[in-house]
Length: 97
Image (cartoon, rainbow, N blue to C red; front, side):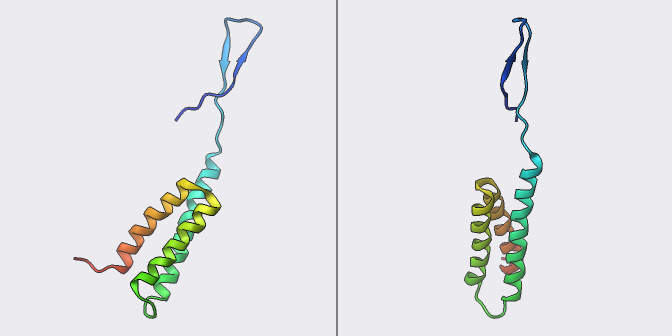
């Protein structure tokens, strides 16, 4: 993805420079890693409470992780957290067909 920034005009009208706006990819990576950490914590809580709670109650721990991720980091990291939550819930808590 390439985002064009401001065009700086020099005194010579034939030379135009386009400077791309820099996005902090480190901040994006921290958001996705933070979302993954929220899901990992909810997985640990779900595994600890597996014997006491039903499957639907364990699913709510993952919902909490997605909601916290949405509030803290925004839409795309929350969608990432929901995808990882579905995969973790399916792998660790549902029986194979």
